[in-house]
Amino acid sequence: MSNSSISVDDQIYSCLNLEKPTSFFLFAGAGSGKTRSLVEVLKKFKKENIHHLKISGQKVAIITYTNAASDEIKRRLEFDSNFAVSTIHSFSWELIRPFQRDIKGWIRSDTQNVISDLEEKQRKGRLGTKAASDRASKIESKKKRLETLDKIKSFTYNPNGTNSSRDSLNHAEVIKIASVFLSNKPLMQQILIKKYPILLIDESQDTKKELIEAFFTIQTIHQDKFVLGLFGDTMQRIYTDGKLDLGTNIPDSWETPKKVINYRCPRRVITLINKIRSDVDGQIQEPASTNIEGVVRIFIVDSNIELDKQAIEKQISEQMSEFTNDDSWKNLHSAVKTLTLEHHMAARRSGFIDFFEPLYKSTSDSTGLLDGSMTGIPFFIREVLPLIKAKQLGDEFAVAQIMKKYSPLLDKNFLKGCDSPIEQIKNANTALETLLMLWNNKSEPSLLDILRKIRELNIFTLPDQFAMIVDRSDKTFEDNSKNDNDKSIDAWEGALNCQFTQLEKYADYISDNSAFGTHQGIKGLEFPRVMVILDDAEARGFLFSYEKLFGAKSRTTTDIKNESEGKETGIDRTRRFFYVTCSRAEKSLAIVAYTKNPDAVKHFAIHQDWFENNEVIMESENE
Image (cartoon, rainbow, N blue to C red; front, side, top):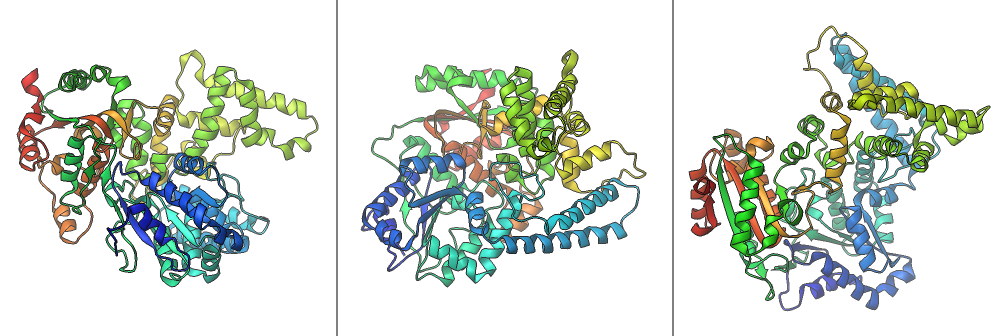
């Protein structure tokens, strides 16, 4: 249901009436001021209705996608304690943390199931292989976890930490446990709605599918006393673990307000992104009265010949400066944000492709790889990398802080029982000096070299999968076939062969310190000048193809089959990614399309009415 006679903010506010709660899905396209609406509605709720919650000791819960978004909303709400703002991992942990006995039961059952599955595969598998060695290591590790379960008084979890101790849960476990408990435990459902009768989820299209479905279940059962408010835009779904059909299956009893004004993009870009999504859901945005006209160009580059892409992109930036009368376009690497559809291209250009590619091709946790939360990555990002950089810079205070927090050598309980704590501290420093010798004579050690030395010196406790890989490197196997191997372990083995400098560049990338961005990294951000790079050959992505989107390459049998069955295709993903990158532009937009079929791309661009004839530049004509 929808009521167009009142403003969107008022419509949302009316849903938060706890005497007559109404759940809602807010369509909020790019640049529509979604966060502003969220904050303004909550400020009004605080002024007029928060006393009802205070009396009952209740709060409004707001789930955001990133820590940065959470911090921004907290700031805008003036850090009011009546609003519980957190990321999905933090929120999930706060819900399940009191259920320590249930968590232990879930861990016990899940671990036993994993062991049984591994032992069955071990019985059927061949001895003397990497797969058999890995399974043996996993079985041993899982059995150790079972043995220590009864000794664990309470489980711990840090949404921003490594979670490597025996009593800690990892990110995936927290989400799984929360989803199961919310779906199947009436008591957990009651606790949620009594504590948070209003739950608002930002970027709901990218929230974990199993959690969204659990919240839908609760809303269906308790719709008379629980508001579930979803803010999002399915066209901006960028992760593969979100709920695919969110927004298309909203119950009739829900409100479906829409924010159709785009305050960010110039008019020309709004026209383009409306065209991009027109065949998907027909959602149309309108410019605000203050929006400038803006400039859009697509530069089509024939990639059948050898190219100096850096020179081409520099040349294009010079042309954009002329088209826009904006000299800042000439400063390609400082005043222009270069965006790619796919991470392979950014990884290659930024210099961490050998680390990134094996993990991206093999992992089922692409979200974790792209935001740095994938099992194993926090160990590198929060322990290994900061320690080595601090030691190389001579920052002994930082070194001491990291070692005290993470290293077994300076564990406070170990030091208490040590005959000579001072001597142990000296030993720890000697171990670090030995580790740094890997860089002697300008050497560039691999991540595997570093892990091997870390374990040898007991500087850190290695995560299980890294310990397995170090063990692998010390063994000879009769059969090196990968058919039966654990793909995630093989992927990490490939990634760990890269040099340490690639880890540094990857860390910069996921921290948005790189010169390149992607659809994931820049969602919610905006830039005056945007250059979008389309290059299937360089990106080598298997999840998308801009050549297919632009008609330069035929759809595969799989594409046609998925399309006929209503499943998502690579073209669907590519269209969404293209929409997200184009919709970042505040003033002007340049699209650089490297293609094996320039004429087909030009034909599509014009005949689909995405671009005017004068906006399509065949770059060969300017050479």
